Amino acid sequence: MGDKLKIAVIGSGISGISVARMLSDSCDITVFEGAERIGGLIKCKDVDGNLYHQVGGHVFNSKNQNVLDWFWSFFDKDLEFVKATRYAKIWLNGLLIGYPIENHIYQLEPVLVEKIIGELLEIKNAPSVQPPGNFCEFLLNTFGQTLFDVYFKPYNNKLWGQSLEDIPLEWLEGKLPMPDITEVILSNIKREEESDMVHATFFYPKKGGSQFIVNRLAEGLEIKTSARIGRITSKATGVDVGGEYFDRVVYTGDVRKLSSMLAGFDVTVTSAAKQNQHWKSRATSNVFCAMDANELSWMYLPEENTKAHRVIYTGNFSPSNNKAGQHTCVVEFSGEVELAEMLEQIKSLPGNLRPLASNFEANSYIIHEADTKEKIDMLRAALEKKHVYLLGRFAEWEYYNMDKCIESGFRLRDQILA
Ligand SMILES: Cc1cc2nc3c(=O)[nH]c(=O)nc-3n(C[C@H](O)[C@H](O)[C@H](O)COP(=O)(O)OP(=O)(O)OC[C@H]3O[C@@H](n4cnc5c(N)ncnc54)[C@H](O)[C@@H]3O)c2cc1C
Image 1 (cartoon, protein in one colour):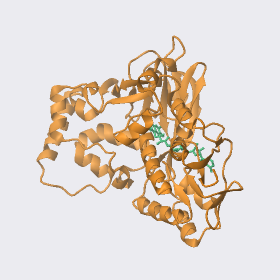
Image 2 (cartoon, protein in one colour):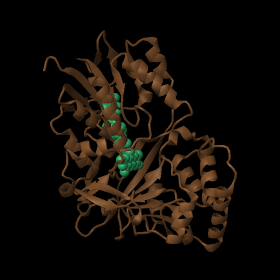
Image 3 (cartoon, rainbow, N blue to C red):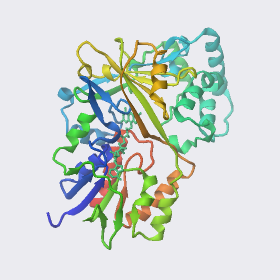
Image 4 (cartoon, rainbow, N blue to C red):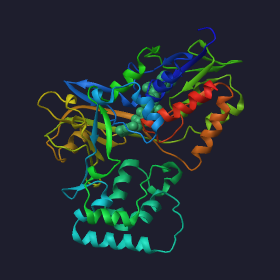
């Protein structure tokens, strides 16, 4: 025990709990969580016998075999999880169009189909064009004006609440669809259902949703809840967190708040930590609803006359998510939307939605600026010399899903143990 590195992990979301788990055999770990319960964004709670994902509707998958191997070492894949097929639709003009829209152009009105196919062929045959400079140009260059106007522009405007020209492409690196136009056209001819596509599956716990995942990973760890850390003080060989000495600290909270938490650090650290305080994030508001039965997993709502941007049919992910005889879903709105307005809005959505609960999450999506990566790298390098490590969606300011949080945890584990 005495020779083990003593590590404080600030935050008990998937990032904090995963890295704590990865280090717990060889280090002495304490996790500090400001909230009453662990889980961060992947928290779920029971509402009258139904499982409510308070943010989003978290499903799991990964393209990284190391992440999958590590993850499945804690669970019985067959007994404890369902492997579900993604079944998403886009609600447009009162019709349910297949997802992704570019593979289901044939379901749109004939006049649109003709225009869209014409534009796609023009893109395909165009001599090489300048690489896109921002998200708006990327969408236009990739899908053409009509698909952009009908779907990509209104949907993304709702989601990001800002001009798509202001969204730098670095932010979306590796996350953007890169459809090949020949394949898009072929999909429309072959009329493949989404369920035929290889990537369209995910894992979901049979009981307890994403809360089950974080609870299992947290078993046996020392976790202090309702323990918000307000100060990290630099010491000669480590740090002081909450009045206790640690050799290292892993911070998984909001990187914009770090500057006001740091004490006794040199100017390289404090000036690097100040550079990000103006960065913007995007909130989400949602209403958890009972609904009439359907088979969908997600429905996207691009139209401007509906404020919500998607419905997540969490009740369809596992039968145990619903009270007997009931079906449930989460209607998601981007930004802060008053409850009264959300309740009014859900009346116009299909499915006979009846509200059960609601939530607001200020920090849901990070918004990158052109130099975000550079600034984070600079801060990371300065902090690491002083035994402080950044990890997770809001600390690294990366558009991570759960699996990427775990992957980043591996990097940090190797670095700390090296
Ligand atoms: C709407 C939505 C849907 C999503 N859907 C999916 C999905 O289906 N699949 C998927 O893989 N990913 C999904 N994601 C992404 C996923 O939620 C995140 O990648 C992941 O939950 C981030 O985990 P984290 O631990 O980095 O951060 P968080 O979950 O934010 O955890 C940080 C924790 O730190 C605590 N904390 C912060 N500051 C302090 C402090 N000073 N002292 C103590 N504690 C502190 C917070 O209370 C919090 O519990 C979705 C995200 C959103 C917003």
